Length: 258
Image (cartoon, rainbow, N blue to C red):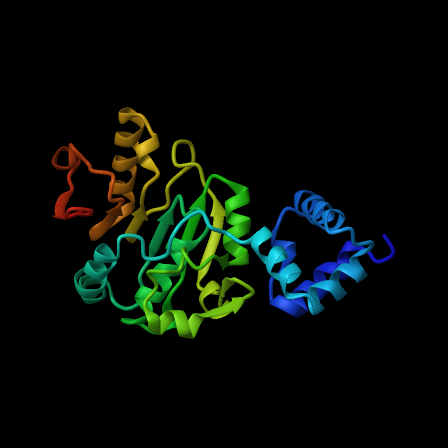
């Protein structure tokens, strides 16, 4: 093609603020090449021109790379409990620089939700969420930060207006929020766990583990949490033997470490 893919990525960044460098290049380039051929367009330069002038093509392109796997503020009542009870308790105990881990973070909905939830209680500049997942691909998507309308449906209106920009039919989270999440790869069953967390959030992933593996992970989380800290799990999960491990049950989905 007359104009190379580097040019295309730069033009897309200018048009949409979407950095295609955050995606695996070989796979993304192949998909975009297929999309260009499907529309019978020759060359990246002509495709860029078409994206700028034809809204249906632009929307099609955005949909092609939009994330729609998870949800922000999933189970809103549990996030309300965090806002009203958990975060104030943590700030009172540990101050306004909290150490929080979003484990098995998937496409970033959860750690980005945590940044926004915390920003109501502490300065944004004090927030840094550790977010990990086993899958390189979802981490790459999380770093892009592009979501469909369904994914952000539960985001409070104040944050939706402040931190999301509509790009075609999708929504891009602001760099202001993205700057407060550090993503990395981590295998819950094999890798070492860091310690001294004020809160660990791990939701809707352990349901896929065996009972033995779940027990191992819950015990490792317990060791990683500070006394006085919390573990927040998913709505389809429970820690049957939480007392044996040492947890207290604070709420249906929140467990404390005395």
